[in-house]
Length: 95
Image 1 (cartoon, rainbow, N blue to C red):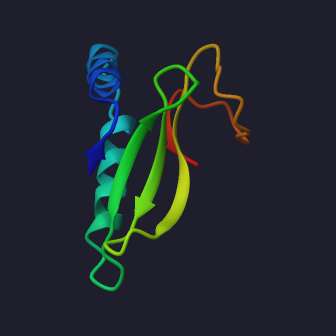
Image 2: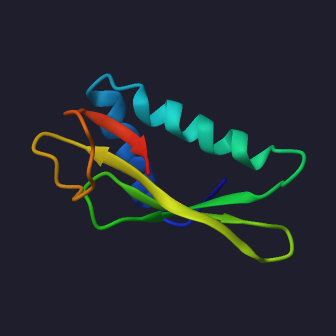
């Protein structure tokens, strides 16, 4: 995983730990699993997102092509992500 926004990443990890949340670590692990897909190896790039404690991610293939682009989004209280979810949720989700 390539962290483009190391300072933001460190603050988000520290925040997740301070509130005892595991959803960030679980989402990061799921993204890391995508990198290890033997049929389509890639590198996940994490960027800072406009929403508090959230990230934009890009899936980049070895030849430079761009794959899936999405968000690793924090749904806080109040939720400032502007992402639709069916049920109220507190933590991180991949969108």
